[in-house]
Each structure stands twice: as C-alpha cells, then as structure tokens.
Length: 102
Image 1 (tube, rainbow, N blue to C red):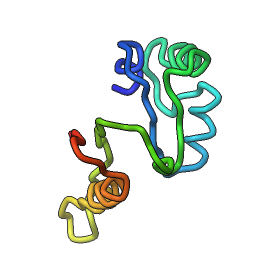
Image 2 (spheres, one colour; image 1 turned 30 degrees about the vertical axis):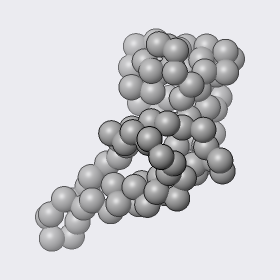
Image 3 (cartoon, one colour; image 1 turned 30 degrees about the horizontal axis):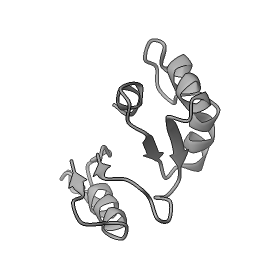
C-alpha cells in the first residue's frame, strides 16, 4: 500500500517499530516477497518519495495516517488489539485538525 501510494504522488512516511526491518527497508530490502517490490522501494527512496522510521518523526507533516498492524492472538486465544491501540496513541500525539485516519 505504501509503495502504491508513493508511486501515485503521495510522500509516504513508513513507520515500523522493528529496527532491523527499518534498516532493511532504508536499503531497499523488503522483509516479505512481492514481485518487483525491492526495485520499487529503492527507486522511491532515490526519488525522495518514501522514507522509513521507527517512530513518527517530530512535527510530522502527515495529513493522512493509514494503520496496518498485526493483530495476533493473546494467551487466551482472543485477538490482541494492543498494536492498534499503540499506533493510535502515537498518532494522537502528532494529530492536527483535519487529520484523516484509516
């Protein structure tokens, strides 16, 4: 989704908490396979259309936030929404009027 948005004119700031994944993405290496994904990421990085961070940058210029996080099962077998809650809390700290959250 991030790559497609960047290819279509949006400046994308990707947030990933795992430092090793951020390092890989910054070098153009995706942590999952999708045809041509690594080439697209590298091209978008070189064109300054996408960047990757481990936290939302201060004074983030974003108007639109798209949350895509895992929802693993907890010890009792129920879906854990902790990642969603953590993401929303982080976004709320950077929120400004007119924010679109999806």
